[in-house]
Length: 266
Image 1 (tube, rainbow, N blue to C red):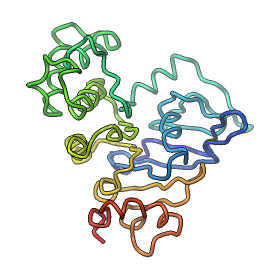
Image 2: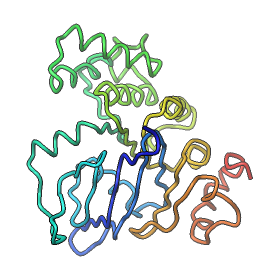
Image 3: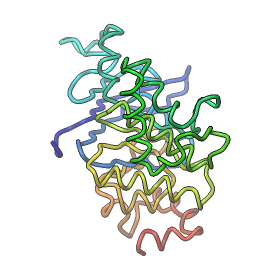
Image 4: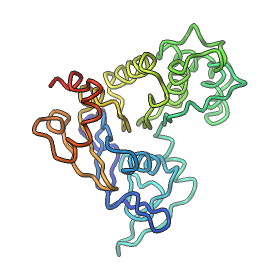
């Protein structure tokens, strides 16, 4: 139900050697809402997303997905205990992720890319996997490209196949790591339109993005990361309200130069 917490992070820390990439992150993502992570390169956005997907193990703190701990749980004395692999896999099944790069199998058609996980992970029969894959290609507007190979598709179409592949696994939460960063402006729009449709359907989404207009208009919650910490967060209308937080103003300068002032309605 919308309003319940889908993702919880408490005092999450991630280090690479002596370099602290995430420093004491506290964040709630609610069911049915879009939360956008914005901020300068190197601020920890993608690392945070990878920790939520448990593609990276956080060094301290607790992450919960729908109330269930992911990777580690907390003992009564405050120390952490690592959870069994089977429990980690069970919780991760609630998460779908779309990356910057499309990561499609080049030797498989669009249909094959979407159906493969259904057969190998969910163990669906070939016909059922085919029908479910086609339904999700239709959902992202690519039914007529089902027999095309990745090399025959535009970048925007490849990314939509990647979205269909993630959605076909029936996740409760979708994570997007700068899904339009490798696309030119014309192709960016078709991917953002699919994401807008998902938002309208009530999909819970955590999105790392540099598309400030998307964050301003689609997200219910915007989180601005800077130097491994959350510098500012709140409803989009509050985060993007003038006068901006000084660090936010500095960050937005580049986007205002590219016309984001129009996108933000300023």
